[in-house]
Every structure is written in C-alpha cells, then in structure tokens.
Image (tube, rainbow, N blue to C red; front, side, top):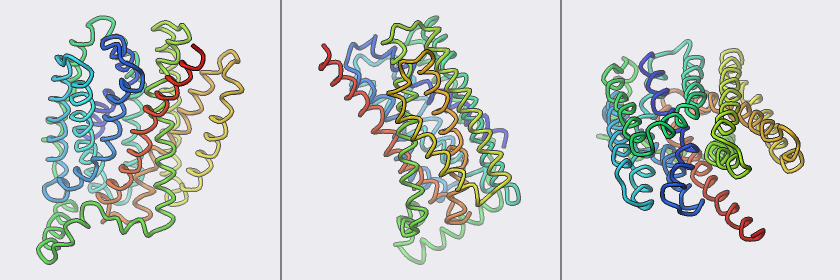
Length: 369
C-alpha cells in the first residue's frame, strides 16, 4: 500500500504540473495556445484513453509489471523532452510517450490496492487518491521552483529522475493471492474462447448498465473542467498581469481545495459505501451551477479564487469516488475492465478540454484585437 501511495504521488506531481510547464513551453517555442496545450492535453488524455493497455498488462502479467513498464515510458518521455528542438517533437515526447507511461503505471497502482483488500477496499482505494491531492498541492510551487532556478531543460531531466522511481515501486508491489487467482482464471478463459480475450481487457458490455453509462458520461464532464483548470488557470493569471507568486497562490488554493475535496470524498465513501453515488450527483450539480455563474462574479475581488476553490473541492470529491462507484456497479472481478472503461471516458473530457478552451482563447483574442 505504501508503494502505491508513493507511486501515485510521484506521477501525479508531474501530471498536475502541466499548467506550469504550459507557460514555460509557450515562452520557449512561441507557438499558439491551442497547439501548445496539446502537450498537457495528450499526456492527461492518454492517461485515460490508454487505460485498456494497462488492463491488458494487468490481466496477462500483473500490476507490478504495469507499474514498471509505465515508469519506464514516463522516464524516457520526460528525459527526451529536455532535448527536443521544436513543439512538434515535444508533443510526441512530453504528450504521447509520457501519457502512455502515466496510463500504464496508473492502472497498476490503482488496481493492485483493490486486489489486496476486501473488507476495507472502498476506504483504501479512496484514500489512495489523497496522494494525488497532495501531489496537486506541491506540483505548482515545485514546478515554479524548478523552472525559475534550473530552466525548462534541467527541469525535465529532474522530473525524469523522479518518475524513474516508479520502476522501483513496481518491483516492491507484490501480487496478492486474489490477483494471482484472477490472472489464472482469465488465462483459462482465453484458452477456452478467443472472444473472451477482448472482453477481459475492455468490456464494452458494461455500457449496457444504463446507470453505469450515465456515471461514465458525468465522469467525462467533470474531467473536462478539471483539466481546463489545471492547464489554463496559471496562464489566466499571467494574462491578467499576475506574477509567479500570484500564479503559485491561485494554483495552491485550487490544490488545497482539491485535497480537501478528496478527503471529504474518502470519508463519504468509508461511511456511505454504495450510497455515495448520491453525494456524487449533488456535488457535480453544485459545481456546474457555480462554474456557469463565473461570468458574473469573475470581476469581483477574489472572483478567480472563488472559482478555483469551488472547482477544486467539487472535482476532488468525485475523483476519489470513481473506482469505488465503478466497483459497486460491476463488482471487484471486473475492476481492471471498469478502471479501463472509466478512464477512457475521463480521457474524452481531459483531452478535449484544454484544446477547446485554447481555441476559444485565440478566437476571443482575435475578436478584441
């Protein structure tokens, strides 16, 4: 469990540094916002879209192997990003390669915890996402420190060294008895029927569960909002004339709020279990309402902080509930498949959000220029 939490902290710190790196990449390559945002959008989106790949490795080998392979991809992608000559190459190394690494390692890190616990599974799974909240809290100030003191090239190399620890965490993640039994059973199923192979990795029949399908679509929506905030909030402050300290303060406010939301979500899961879906619905409704009203209170003193805090809290709560709610719909035997499908829908929101908002930014700039 400790290795899982440390692994989540490791890769999520880099993941949530996307907004800070986005500003540095804008300055380095002098490209437009939409194209530059592809780096973070792809790394975040592929974390979700490539989740079935992690499921394949989990089911055929083990979660340990997933974590190690993902760590290797992420390390290589970040190290290569330090030396790329243009944004097109950065999109490949920092977006595609790093995103695939995030996806494969995340699949193993989350699923290995679900296999180890039975009585306290929901609580342990939800609390594992608190590591991601801590990572979000330290990502912005740590990223600003790296860029200001070491520059973009050295920063990517330092981040690559951090991600290399995922290989170590994977080596320490011993498969549980439950995991070994499920791998053996699925291997037998594949030998019996060739069709069962595809069903074992990305089971689209789960979408026939209408309640679960609605949950997946809502997951796309709040991930759209979350990744837009992570990617564009720092640049929003910069456009308004804010300094690095202002950027750090706003992103830290968002991060602290998100961590509080994750904690509240974890406590809700541990107390309500299957009934936490009702809290999930109410939280997203409140977030949608406050986000739609941002055009009204954005001009008020502290308006940006109000937006950041509410979005941080109300995306933190559903984040930690996602795996537990998925299991309540499909059962623990389908945890790898449910994880893969849920994260594919996360990817729909994560990959489209930053790019769409980047295009809106360019359009509005042209209108008022």
